[in-house]
Length: 133
Image (cartoon, rainbow, N blue to C red; front, top):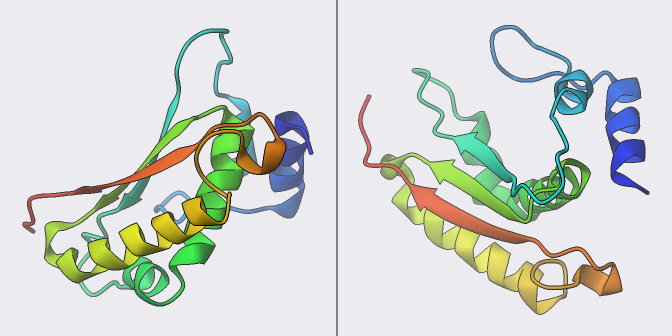
């Protein structure tokens, strides 16, 4: 699929953001300007700072490859070659889980240079916050 086709599929799916407004993800993606030669960076906000929530933690701790796959597809659709997962400082043990899953994805050709011969390069980095409420 082309990046444009992926954006259209996300629009058709009705997928919405998990923030308070629940804004349609595909529509948000379609607003992103596409100037040539300008680097893009995708940031996954996994801070999960709302009291009593743990939806992000569950994903990262128990099914991190699902998150990574979603980030790869999103990165391709949006033209980002460098993607960052921002994780709260209190989730120190999850950083190790994510970094191991990223290494496994690299070892299987799903991250790095020329992913599966597609010509698309993508790297995912974990950035740990300082921790605080």
